[in-house]
Amino acid sequence: MMIRSSIFPSLLLVLTSTAHTYAKEMTDIEALASKPTRCTYEYAFEMYGAHCGGLRLSKIPSLRGGIEILDFSDNKLQEIHADTLSSYSSIKFLYLSENQIYSIHKDAFAYLTNLQTLDLSKNVILELTDAIFQLPSLRKLYLNGNPLLHLSLSSMEISKPIKAPLELLDLSDCKIKVLPDFGILPQLVLYNISHNPLITLDAQAFSSMCKLTKVDLSESIEKIKLCDLKMSIMWFQERKIYFQLADYSQLNSREFENCPKFNIPDRFNTSYHKCENAYTEIQSVNTSRRTWLTIAGGLFGFLVGFVLLLYIMHRHNVAQTKKTSKAIHSAPPSDVDKNATAILLNNAS
Ligand SMILES: *[C@@H]1O[C@H](CO)[C@@H](O)[C@H](O)[C@H]1NC(C)=O
Ligand SMILES: *[C@@H]1O[C@H](CO)[C@@H](O)[C@H](O)[C@H]1NC(C)=O
Image: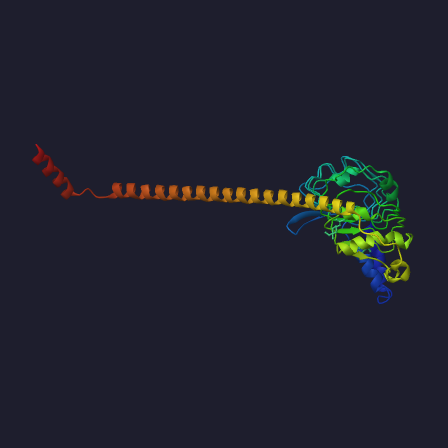
């Protein structure tokens, strides 16, 4: 309110002076004044979400329960404690990019078992917890633009195989020199490791990513000797993995052509097949889960239908009984019938 009342006189001033020149500025001021100052709620994509982006908040306020999307990007959050998000276990999509997050408690996301997308990009994460890689539903993880992340990545013990079913992993622009070893990533499709000063590229690591279709290496391999890239490039070509580079001309050079020749080692195929087996297993678990769900759903539908049928029949019966009893009560006693009965009785005696 204070802000608004101080903006108003200046707005008037602007309006009364040179309206044309200040037209753009005025709309900016207006936009600023009309910007929400608290989180808004929205129902989109059949999901309930809280939107708190760009509110300069340094704490996540108390939010409504049951939210599945939380957009808290572009704020001033610095630490995520064990209880910061613990009451929002329904969150599936969590956007925390462009904050000032440097500390994440190891149990920060422990209750978020439905979390599918976690965006922690453009922060200053000092220490990453291995727990993130073990989140049971996490498919997309954005850690790009964390200039201090390489420090913790290089010292981190990652429990393998990791439990998160990662499909997208973005580690771009994190000053990484040596990529961490994640072990088998059977569902990873996109691996973004661009804009890092890599000094080595372990080709074997890619053989444990059997569903990989794209790896972004732009601005990341300039420090690596050309011939040391040969094995990875061969693997990408062999497995038809699209690799993005800032400049492909090196690969067409005589120097690259003259690099020592070798075959792809056996162990690559071994880890590739291990990865494929893991993938098949996941698929079959998912399929059987789906099958069971379908069966359960069908059974439930049948039961509901059956109960409904019973109810309708019951209602019908009740109506019918009422009708007949009404008919009996309202029927005039017929003398013909009475006489007939009397005759019958007389005959019998
Ligand atoms: C990889 O990350 C960089 C920088 O963060 C981004 O510009 C690029 O579009 C990303 N690549 C892909 C394939 O998403
Ligand atoms: C590895 O697999 C590829 C394709 O399946 C095959 O062409 C190659 O011979 C295999 N290499 C070894 C050493 O088994």
